[in-house]
Structure formats: structure tokens, C-alpha cells
Image 1 (tube, rainbow, N blue to C red):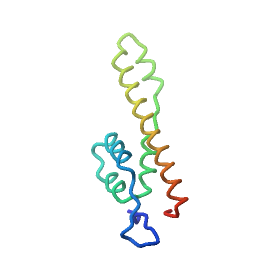
Image 2: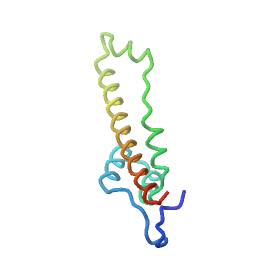
Image 3: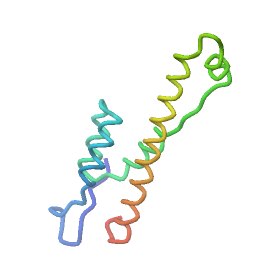
Image 4: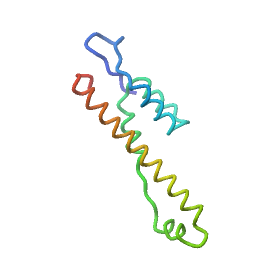
Length: 108
């Protein structure tokens, strides 16, 4: 893992992600210890994880099945996946804002 962000004052000054951001990321990824370590250590790999996880695609077969006679459950599943992808995209945008702020402050 990358080193945490350090200030000019030395390694005891570590940049931390905001607590509410950490909580929302952990809610979306309840079983991701490597991600939790990255969050706890101010690691920029959090952004990569969020960006990679936000991808959402639906195959044509799934769409056809969702609109078929027995597709109501599949429609609900697709909607849930799309909503989760949207939440993760928002987290990624928030991470980008945090990273930009840290960059301006000289942490990255």
C-alpha cells in the first residue's frame, strides 16, 4: 500500500478521509478489508477502487427479459444495480473533490 499523506510536520500528521465519507464507502462495500485499510490510511487507491466499482452495464438479453412477462423481479434487480452504481459514482466524485483539495494543500 502507498504511504499515507504526510504533512511537512512529519509522519504523525496523516491526512484522513472525512468520517462521513468513510462511513458511506463502508456501507456500499461491507466486506472489503483492503478498502478499509486504504480508507484508514488516507490512501489514494480508494479512488481507483470506487472508479472501478462504479461501472454498470446491462446486456441486451437482460433488458429483453426484464420487459418480458416474468421480468418484474429482474427489473427490480436492474434498478437496484443502477442505483448502487449511481451512489458509487457520487462517492467517486466526492473522492475526486477530496483529492483535489489535498493536492492544493500539498499532500499529493
